[in-house]
Length: 230
Image 1 (cartoon, rainbow, N blue to C red):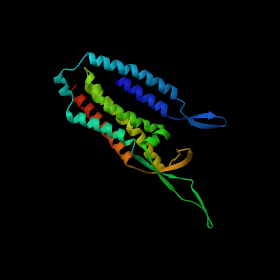
Image 2: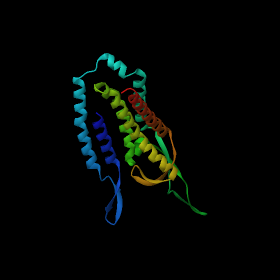
Image 3: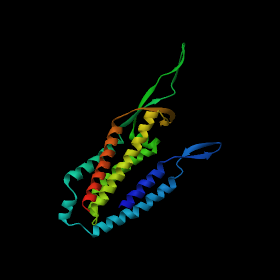
Image 4: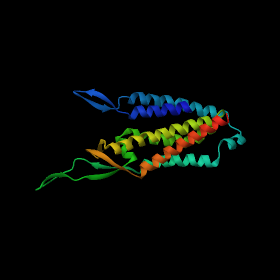
């Protein structure tokens, strides 16, 4: 299960990352590793199915289930996953259009226009936000996957918590750095492509950040408990 989740996350990262590619007389950012990312997705699927089949053939005793999972831990994990998924449809950042010239008798000047960009908008334009969606899905599946793991469910849970939290925190840190550094992004509204600067974070940004931090903390706590009780 851990290997399947790792391949899925790595494949997603390779699908969305853009690298400079020499086209004509200049470099253009392109999804050069997209085929490799899709290949890793396909490779992750048989490992996932195999883990489910192997876990279903070796069910856990009811008493061990109660010891492994508390209702509080289960509810917190599922809630964080739902919040991470919900954040993708909420406003993440306010962006300002950088080129809106207005001509008057006194001269030409720019009037800023502000847009509320949701996580879904950013997912389509800046692919790294897709990792937030992947992190939320992993955190939702973690309880089910751990129930199917007979040997060391806490190890699986700690790893998947940390993996999902890292997936979410990565895009959040990227956007926070863009806001602080006033990085210019190319965003398209309909058929119009414009240059925008991210000015301030919004509700979805903070919800995703808190979800990622919560999942990471849960993973660290679980890992610490494992070192104390091997």
